[in-house]
Amino acid sequence: SWREAGYALVENIVPLALVERAKAEVLPFFPEAGSPESEAVTDFGSQGEMEFPTASDALNEITLHPRLLEAVAQLLGISIRDCRLTQSEAWAKYGRDTRGGANLDNQDQRMHVDYPNHTLTHPADWNSPEGVEIILYFDDVTTCGGATELVPRQGPSDPAFEGPFVRTPGLSGLDFVNDREEAEAYLKRAAPEIARWREENLYPRARAAHFTPGTFLLYRHDMWHRGTPLLPGAKRLVQNLTFRRSDCEWISTLHTGWAWAMYRPSKVMVRMLATASVDQRCVLGFPAPGHAYWTPETVEAVRARYGPLGMDLAPYAAPREP
Image 1 (cartoon, one colour):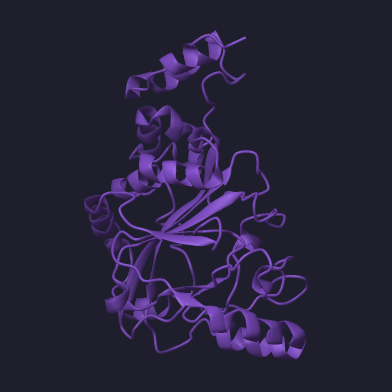
Image 2 (image 1 turned 180 degrees about the vertical axis):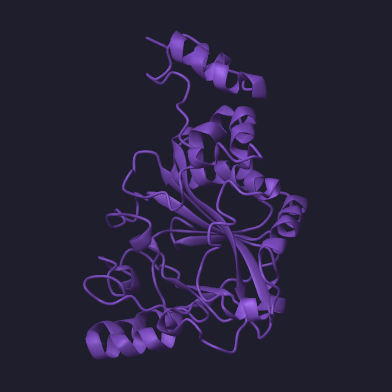
């Protein structure tokens, strides 16, 4: 489904108990639904509060969960050690009657693709995917609404997926507009042919993703999709993650580098790196065993830094294969 239609909805990638624990740990960081503070939340993100590495051990565990990394590697057709994390953040969306964000409001999004603010280039050929985007839902769509709508690709001749993917606000000289009504009205004025193409090829074909707590939506940077309004007074919590192939350096890391968290009093990043598996460290950019970085001197230097916290340097000390 991911390779052909562009997305897949998958259950049970990580244990539901872990998802429930993460939700309990994350909820206190966000305003209650219906509060004045929630009315001011009109865009994506957590203002850095829930960017990896977070104060939630469960959320961090989900980010590097071996089954999730295995799924990403499987979709990209590479090893886990060739995957790189570029985004992991929890955020809340609220059912609001107002559009406080004006034309940038995220309550009822225009149909779009995600690559423009993830990569410096343009997605490669459909059959050479460079990254995997993920939404983990913590709630039930029947009680909160806000289903993600997606346009499934229908084969290589599908007009909705004829590149380049630039028929959307924010690209090719067009202004960035997020609100669906405002975006389509703007396109009718600024680029009527694009507006007509979107009206014919995207919105009529959109399918709503049904989710319950623990559902993972795995999709692509070149997948047409949008966020829809939540039910009035509702609150929806998700975790957004993105992974790329290690050789696609033009796909940016969206957050502050992981090393910036090393001096936090909680020692969250130091402890995580020290106790992670070799594969998990690679996903964060740590050099793999056999990399040219590793010499007897660097092994001992890294041991001096992380050994007291339990890091096993034996895999990195093994002689390189000729």
